[in-house]
Image (cartoon, rainbow, N blue to C red):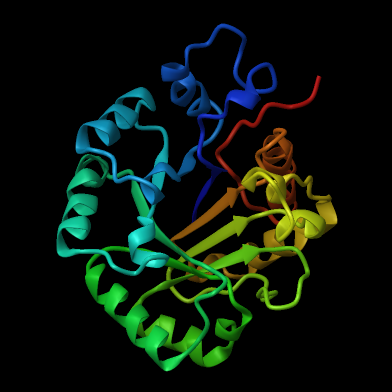
Length: 270
């Protein structure tokens, strides 16, 4: 099982002095990031599909050390009015990554309002058809989806269930690690219950530092499934004040407790 660990995005101005050295140019952030982590989830593609040359530049600056999961554009998951042209642009844009062998799963994050209804089930099948021949990880934020019949359907379709860690709030899935494909995908969002729904800035909801005991079940789960997995992705989104950096180091240690070696070198305090 290959382990890929990193964060949702890498270009954080508020990481200056915490992770990025003073004076480091923003264009060199990915170069520095690649010295510590081997995966990143590209979030910019949710808002605008970059050109192929943008992904080619990311590939060059990372020296091939990083695997890229690419978030699917919001017209697919939120507006649900994506055109044939949008899908074509997304697949063409990521071609440099695919050709270099560093393209991870596409990540489709559906909103909380996307409940499990007959119409939404049909729409999800259509999205899965669009990504046929490519790896697609799907995050479904409403608890109505987190049940065995859905997971069985994912297994039949070859879809990756995104095991997302949320605050313990009504309506949000609390399913832990679920494996539906040879790829496991963890998105660790933080458990800031006070700010999840009530916040002024989107980043506030992710302002959270995990305790080791909150993460240990995931390390144990990955170890338990290691024999059936080809890849496991662990992506931390609790980035506002650099908490993800500390949690990645701690998670590497938790994996080591289970006999799993994570090929990353997170910065350590002191």
